[in-house]
Length: 431
Image (cartoon, rainbow, N blue to C red; front, side):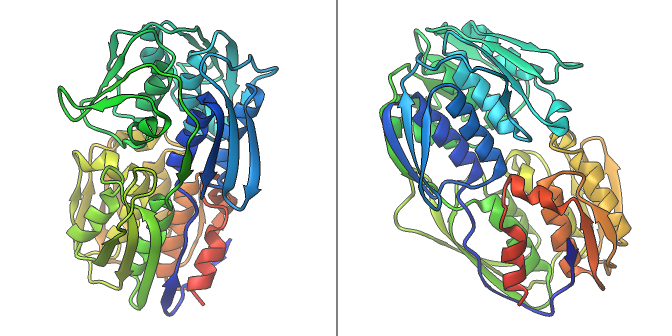
């Protein structure tokens, strides 16, 4: 994809439905006994992988219009064994959370994916599901996919699971499995991660208690999920490239209405505030399916360096490559620490964004758990690689819009994993 820097940026971007919520809502609807309806469902390739999983276990998912789907679930414990391995493509969300949903059925399922997914660690799935009685085997090297899940119904309840890393996907895997247990199941995290699943479960009539021992403690009480209706909020992670671009560009004002404002997902907004960005947030009066929503507006700003680490990392993990891009335009040295998980995403995002930004003239130093960027610098258009990673492709597109001269992004098609219409939306606001 060839990207030329725009002179000015103006417009309103309506982003697709939240990918994280869409995955979870589809899986929960598949476990419900009856027909559920979702509006604003993400059209990302990752979410398509979760839809394929549901089709292979006997759940019927039907398109009713753009972003609108109906899901005829079978009820807990009634999924059939898939006829062949489930292709999760590039979606770690499908593999991890899908494994949790599959664990509560007396079936054997094999989950596989593309080369990128096969390189990602999955032994941690076994760590959180085996205390409930499921058997999980990783057939790849060093605990990597393909993954085999031998489920049972009911699973063993009355246990507390402590994930080895702070991960909302691991937590969700346990909670979805716990729906089919014979007693309550508790997850304890050292750091509270995004809570979309906890907000969805009561919508389907499944009791879920948060707290009672710390903010990272969640307990699910087994119950038959009931069909539900949900309007999925706009994906803040999809809006993030436009918000970052507006803050760093010298002549910009962009609005993103209807986006989710879940406080465990708004880390980028906090980083923007710390960097001195001119941003305004207008919360909507009515939440969407338990999720707070609203409009975010960002305009051109004089940015200053900041430090990003600690509890903000899980709340901004997907947006950290964008923070690195912002740092190239900020005064001073920006430091990101405690983000080792970036190295085991769809790519090694620490190295991927550092290589891309260096090719454009940025001063970037990497560390095992993060990076440092010195700014401001004048970026120069260059040929860069997304390395098969949708977040890197979008972050480099933002950098290209801030550079002098045109840039070419190899592998830009990776944006389809989360936001197929990204470049069309970018072109629209660039005029």
